[in-house]
Image 1 (cartoon, one colour):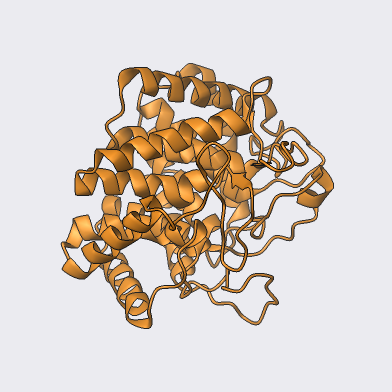
Image 2 (cartoon, rainbow, N blue to C red):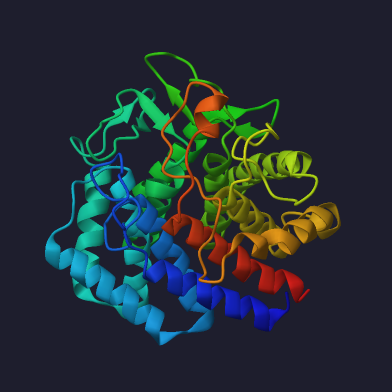
Length: 358
């Protein structure tokens, strides 16, 4: 695709996301993961993708949508605080920096304070954020997802509010999640760890879980002041992950399977789009060498539009996925149109426009 085609597809994908509805599908969680008007983690990822698109397109309709969305949710009253419901706070912070609306700042301060205070976000193990979600504290459990859902917001809040202790805590959380979740032989992350079981459940190398690190780190290093030694360590993990992703990319499409190292599982487009965005971001930032990743990136980009329908829906996106005890669990997660699938595709298409111009 050329730049004009990318822009057309971006508009289609973003328009579709802004109009996503639940449509009567039986969901397994207390708050809808499908409806764009709900405050949960899928919508949080979607809003982040929309804001990133607004920053490059300067489309005022997107900005108006974001302001209306947050004003409506705040007027309704925000939901219970947990790891996943923190996800929309990331874009609220970005929106505050863009608009300066005082009401947004209060919510940011209050939510960040809750994360840090005793009696707020539950800690487990060596002080890691327990992956508490709506309706379930998930005792003793950590997930790689937390890096996007909570840690990135906390770090950005630290910069905004000039709270070095927030940034230090975010750095600590990333280090500890690497400690417990990284498979050092593969260079990829397990989905989770349980301190009571003292294991990584089924030791599955799940696609979307891994892409949270790929995406978060690139944004983190662009916006958060990180000591050089820590930056080098984070990047060494990122580069090892990228090398593993190149190894396991599907031979025909260049995309990735929902279980990364199992070609018998389905190709999953939220993970694939996230990996592509993160790898291309790494190339333009000088963290990865173009010549080492060009073949796989070009192949994947050539197949992305096959998974976007005429209405802008991103296909082959797995529904919200708790930790499973074996690969079969992940193979059987159904696919639906999801806001985070739309958002990941937006990030990938934006990076592709920059990548193709080089």
